[in-house]
Structures are given as structure tokens and as C-alpha cells.
Amino acid sequence: MLRRRIFPWTIVALCWWSVDCLVAPFAQAAVRGGPDASVAIIPIHDGSGDRVSTELAQSLVEALPRLTGVRVAVPAHVDAIREYAENLAPEPVLSRSTTARRSGTTQLDQLARQLASAKEQFLRFDTSAADVQATQVRQAFADDAALRSGAGALYAETLLTLALIYQTERRLNQMDAMLTQLADFAPHYVLSAAAYPPSVRERYEKILAQHHERGSASVAVQSSPPAADVLINGVAAGVTPLTLAALPAGAYTVTIQAPHYRAVQKKITVRSGESVRVAETLHWSHARENRSTSGLADEPSAAISTPRAQLAAAVRIAELARVQKIVTVNVNEAANGSSTVAVQVIDSALRAGRRPITMNIAADHHQLHERLAALTRTVATQVAQDFHDVASREFSPQGAVDPSVLTQRAHRMRPWMWAVLGVLAAGGAVGGWALTRGGGASAGGVAGAPVGSVAIQF
Image (cartoon, rainbow, N blue to C red; front, side, top):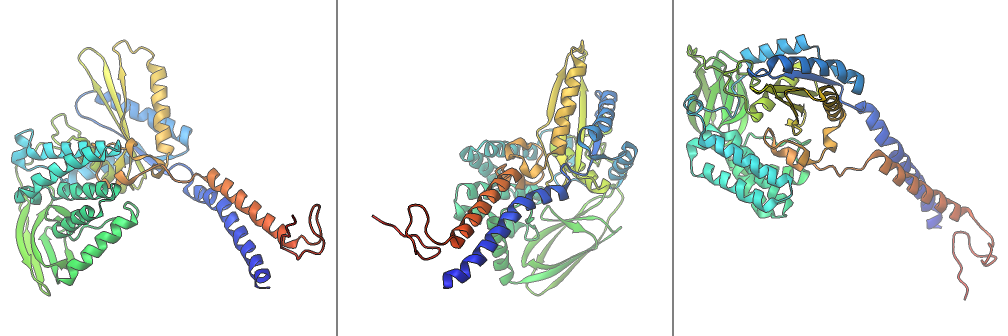
């Protein structure tokens, strides 16, 4: 009797779940609208092939709406935003000091390249090699306190990269050790729920809670002029006026910086229950450095033109322009008349870029039209893709701003897979219902057998 009461409700639940499997994936795809809603095309002007970069970018502006249906931002609007970002954008978090930039290759450059190499190894599933290289970077930071405070964001990125490597290898104690070091160094760092696995976030939040149990303090940072960037131990915390209500007790280096002003650094020690106030006046820097603060170079001599700086600048422009993706176009011309084209598609939400699409053009422009058409189709395909469905190896580790892209795997269920699963579940539910409703004798069965039961004869 109990079975007769429960089983119909089980059928109802299975049918509901089947409908959900059939309809939900397609409804979600309809809500997303297939491809992303908007994109901005940005030509890179670095003193080589600038005119061609602009012309190729314009051709993409005209072609992408036709091929993908996305809305392409008006180039004049994007140019205005780039000019705004160039004049008002904060210093890049990983920018080198004046002396370091003038000296060329620095230890920080080498560490950034080595961490990028570690990511490359991780994306190829060579976790052992990735562990070795990332550990060497972490050790370099551990041996130099000034390096940690001067490039805190890179140090935090190194710790997170190691944590993800250890999670993959199921070395949970080592992962906890990296997350603990991150909490000690930058307790204001927040792991995005959309970017990091729940297991990593939960462990990090538990470690932060343990830090707060030892006591916390309130830190207020003000500056004149306001709206200056605040870095705690070299990691961005916000803009002034800024109040950190629950900073764990400890010693920190507070940096306040703004475009065209000399940065100010101040060391503070906070104790449990205290309220610390930091107020600084920034002084105008008359010797403006010869570079573009937007990160996307508009002058041949711009110093910050690394993939990392370009990607960070592109993300900032995407946020200001309110577009989902950025496409950067860079053409470099050689003395013999040949050219190299590099086009990169960047997702502002994931703060990550795909591996650049490159093409070499011979001096005689052999099959130029066909090759440019193929390049445009490839770009259109990447623009239309949901980056959550892209395998991590397809991202560019050289330009990754956030190590969370290392967690990307293209193993999600496709809508058609859910549809097949839903049909199978619905068929099973209908079959079960038919079995419970079918009574009497059947061919080869026993007359008078109870409904819903199976009688076996030997």
C-alpha cells in the first residue's frame, strides 16, 4: 500500500526532472543569446604597422556583426574611452619602479616570465614541472620582503597558482599552506565565486576566519586628491576614501598612488580592536614617464606593452565601455615588406585572453584576401564562444591576469547531452507508470498475479 502511494509521486518527480533536463539548457542558451552581446575592437599602435592595424580593426568592425550577430562598439566611442583611460587610469598593479623600467630586464620580469612558464606547463597537465617553476618564484619572493611589497599582486598570483596545482594533485595540506600564506600576506584578497572551485574558496574562507579569531582592526585610508588607488602589501584594495573594517592584526605596507602623482608608501602595524587612519597628500610628479598609462601603447616608445599589461588595460576598457569582450589587433611590419598579424580575443568577465591568432604575410601579399577572410572567420568563432566552454589550454598564460583561468575545463554537459538524458529519464518514468498500471495476466505470465508485481515460474 505504501508503495502505491509513493510510486506515483516518484513518477511525477522524474517527469518534472526530465522536463527540466530538456528545457533548462536551451532556456539558458536563449537567455545568454548565444554569442556575447557586445565587443570592442582595438588596434594596437606601437609604431610599426599602425595604419594596417587600424584598417584591419575597421574590417573586423564591419564583419563581426554580420558573422556573429554581436553588437560592436562604435570605434570613436572606444577611442574616447581609451583616451580617458590613458589620462586617468591608475598605475598597473604590477608596474615596475622608475629605476627598474629604465634598467631594462629586471628580476621581476624574470619572475613573471617564469610564472607564465609554470602556467603553461600546468595547462599541458605537466603539474610536476609547473610545481617546480612556481615554487622557485615563490621562494624568490620569500627571500625578499621588498620584492613582495613591491610586486604583491604577482606574489599573490604565485600562491594561488600553487594552490590550484596542489588541489589538482590532491595535496591538500600543501594547498592549505599556500592559502594560509595568501591570507597572511593579503587578507583583503577575495576569491571570486564565479572563478574558483568551491573547495578552494571554502578552505580559504576557513583560514581567513581563523585569522579573524586572533583579532582584527579597522583601517581608514584617505588621500588628497581623492580617488587614488590603495594597495595593501602591493595588492589592490580599492580607491580612497577607503575603509577596511576587519583587517587582521599585523604589519602592512600601504601604498597610495594616482596618475601623474608621486606614490606614497607607509608601513603600519594594526592591533586587535584598534582603528588606524592613514591620510596622505599626493604631490604632482613633474617628470612624467614616457609611457601610456592605459597599457595599450599609442606611442612607439611606450614602455608598458607586455601581454600582461595589454590584457589588464583591455579589461579596464571593456569595463568602461560596458562590453563583454575585447579584440586587440596588432600588425608589425618588417623592413623587407612582410608583416606579422596578431589578433587576441579577451573576455572581461574572466579577465583572460585566448591565445593570440597569428598570421605571417609575405611581402608579395600572396593569397592575402583568402588568408584575411580565414582570420576573420576564426576571430568571429572565438567572439561567439562562451569562454566557460573553452579548455584552459586555449587561454594565454602570458597574459593571464587571474590564475583562476587555470581551473577552466571544457567538460561541461552540452544541451543535447541533457536532452538525451531527459528523454531516457522520461522513458523510464513512463515505463514505470505503465508497469504499475498494467494488471491481469500477460503472455507467459500468471493469471491473478498482483498488480505491479512479477511472478516467476520454473
